[in-house]
Amino acid sequence: MKEFNLILTPGLENNDKIVVDFIREKYGEEMPWIFYSLPYVPPYQENWEGIINYERVCQYHPFLDESQEKTIVIDLKEWVSEDRIHEDFLNIFFMYLHDQHSYFDLKYVFTVGAYKEKDVRELIMLLYQYFEKGCIKINRVFQDIGELEKYITKKHKHISKELVARMAGIIIEGKEKIGGISQLDSLLEGIENSVSGIRERIDEKLLIQRAEAVRTTGFYMLYEREMEKILGEHEKNSEECKNSIRKGRIA
Image (cartoon, rainbow, N blue to C red):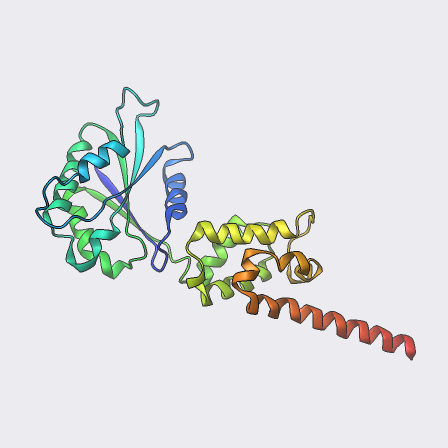
């Protein structure tokens, strides 16, 4: 059955990592995939090479590849704006994909950058004209704090639940500072590496113990004011604890 997958990541332009995770979860870790961005071309432009360039990038033949299956990830974000969905070149491209499926067992995953579901309704209707079945997956990891907490908890197991919640709030408030999931992972890995060698989970207390190293990380540099609130609270608590001990000794 000819099917398509449409991955929506509203608010998140750079969604390659989310798409790859989707492919791995749906089709397995070994499923090969190729990425192609279909550039917008004005109507009736001569020498349109959309399909030619697609074939160059996604070269595939079942007798030349070890696997009989392959996933093609196609970025269509340039076609969503200004009602470009109904232009002839895009329809011709979908016709080609439809016919290609008759020969090869390909899996199609379409992405549209940071657009929301309401922005791509006409695209969805068009896809159903060429495919018999569709799966529409919406990932709101940068819109919903709960979704972001789940993602961080799954991918960064060394960070405590309480600190994950604190960081997720910081990120949602300043999400425009981070370009995508790959960058987010890199920034959080920097935090984890800054306190490496510790077996216990990283919590706010551990952060202050390694405050000097933490303050050199990319995450701290992006969210300096917010991170200083975390580090400062523990510094204040530590000072109050020391003063309390001194008073007890004096008494």
